[in-house]
Amino acid sequence: MELLEVKNLSYKLGNFKLDDINFNVNQGEYFVLLGQSGSGKTLLLESIAGFNKVEGEINFRGSDISQFTPENRDVGFVYQDFALFPNLNVRDNIMFSKKYKQVENPEETLLDISEFLGLMPLLDRRIENLSGGEKQRVAIARALFSKPKILLLDEPLSAIDPTFRNSIMKFLKDIHRRYNLTTIHVTHNFREASYLADRIAIVMKGQIKQVGTASDVLNSPSSIEVAKFLGFKNILPVSILKEDSENLFSVDPNTIQISKEQLYCDYVFKGKLEECMGIIDHYKIFINVEEEQFFAKILKRDYMGCYADRGESIYIGFDKKDICYL
Amino acid sequence: MRNWFVYLLASLACIILLFLLIPLVKMIFGGDFSVVWETFQQKDVLDSIYLTMRVSFMAMLFVLCTGLPLAYLISRYDFFGKSLVEALIDIPTMIPHTAAGIALLLVFGRGPIAEFFVTFGIKFSDAEPGIMIAMMFLSATYLINGAKEGFNKVDIKLEKVARTLGANPLQVFLKISIPNAKKDIINGSLMMWGRGLGEFGAVVILVYHPMVAPVLIYDRFTSYGLAHSAPVAAIMIMISIMIFLSVRFLNNKLK
Image (tube, chains in turn orange, yellow):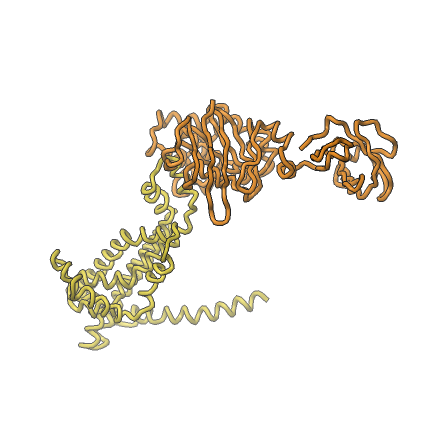
């Protein structure tokens, strides 16, 4: 069931513009806005929260809320630096909304959230005495306490030590399920998006470039710029495959086979080795085929030393199943 | 390498510190303490000190109510003429205090504005409200600028999050913005109050009687000489320092 619909949303801030944004978020969905820094993701999230006067519609269960003030939108917001209130301790931060919103059984709610998020021993602590991870949990608890209809997360993992990110990603998913939330999560990290998202919208230069299920967006980018952003390599013309098309395709560097001998794959090319770079556990190999450059990754445990010298002829091959047409 | 540089800085810093310190020490400890104590018990001295503190405090309260919103507006919003407003706030610190007194006298001592206030029984010439506006005009800058700095330090994201948690803009201002800027607001208020205590030039033009402490010191100096004015000055300096240090101490204790 559709919960939120963003329709023709535009907003100008200086030289930057959110331009004709359209997407919808379903009830209970974990929706990720994925884009590079400066693409307008946070601005879009803030616009949904009501911090900006936008053009267009933001429909919540069919009613336009685009003119509502933030306090009347029932959203919970967690910033990447958590924005905890320094003048209040952990308990008062979490229960801040109690004075302004009707929260049923506030003490029980506090207890439940604090227990689930492991905040019980921290309730009387001051904010400046918390670690980054603890601050994040308090910020999430504060948002959850207000019983939001939608939880908005702005790069919640970027201020977290990388060693804890995986466990916190799992934790975010657990929270989403336990509290039956609808979540919009902003990130620039597509690994984060691929783990968390039910659906993804790619945001680039203030526009939505692609919306779809996580696997669709991450495996079948709709344009070159989305493919490049998602880290696709070997974006090359289909004509090189001897197919009659002006389109492009991409092939994963890990699936390309290399040999001095003839290979038996769906597509096999003979090219010249341009460069072979040894990187910790693998080689990065660049091969020139018909003036196009292929990039392949070969594990060091499979090959001892670079497979060929620079300038030598070499065969590369890959199968049709490993190709992604753009 | 580093040591000589630090010594150089410290030597130069000592010159200005001694310049600030010696007159105060001389004033407090240079005289006969029994004379200071005797002066302290004189009714006109006590009345004058009490009047100075009370009116300066009231001026500070008035600017807290009106200057805080102004400081917040400047800190949070861009609007036409913002630089002009900021310049207007700073101008009183740059003009001669006697000139400010004359300007205030022209506006509040006579003419339609003075008459308007008289209908409410408020008179500025030779009356407490006159002392208050003179103090306010010349020292409001400290409070407004202090508060502006404080609001600038409050991350706007705190206010945004508070809005999503149900608080309206006024509630956010009262519960988030002011408490998190309180240190600078208190410092600014203290500076304003302290500056008000010492205001002479503008006050003396608007209000000679009732006498605030600086006018009393001047009056005694011109009428009776240094021996009679110095103890009053010493008392005023001691009280100001005590208040200043205690409020600073309490403010530093504030988390």
